[in-house]
Figure 1 (tube, rainbow, N blue to C red):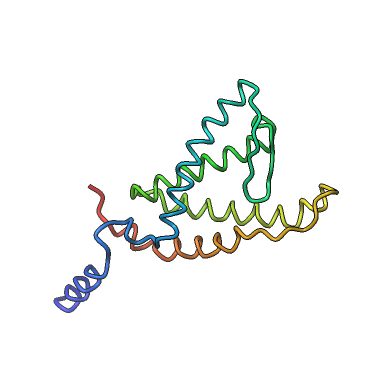
Figure 2: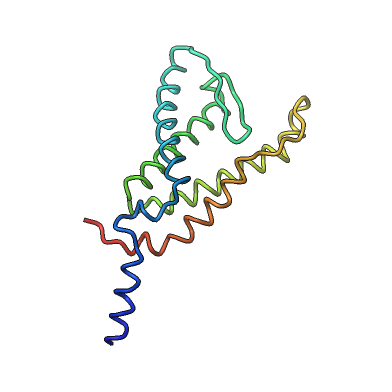
Amino acid sequence: MEKTDKAFKADAKLLPLRRRGLLPWWIRFFSWFFMITGGLAVFGLIAGFFNISFSISLYGLEETNPHSLIGLLIIILFIYKGVTSYGLLFEKDWAIIWAKIDAVFGIFFCVFSMFVLPFLIEEQGVVIRLEIALLIPYLLKVDKIKTAWHSFKTV
């Protein structure tokens, strides 16, 4: 029993003081970015009610009308990414699950825009989406820290 306690204390010393410390710098950077753009997406949705058009793009999906089907989808994705980023940065219990869903949706939409959209839109050729180069490590990292994230006691 004492050996187990020592092993637990040794493992506890390796854990950062906060959940945020489990996130690498690049996930923290993009979390701040998407938390800000998620907030801007809410304003973009409101601007659409006043017939204000603007260009919005994510994962190869592009639109100038925020109230079209694609425009609403992009805005919802930005808002979801913003809420997920908030959860990661402010160490919420649900953040890891949301982050995994975010990564899976991102990978799906990247693959869709790379391999399906070129057949649906004639003037669009095959485009390799570089976002997928960060989405896959993002998914792997949040899956790797899941156990440590949930081992923290919430106050």
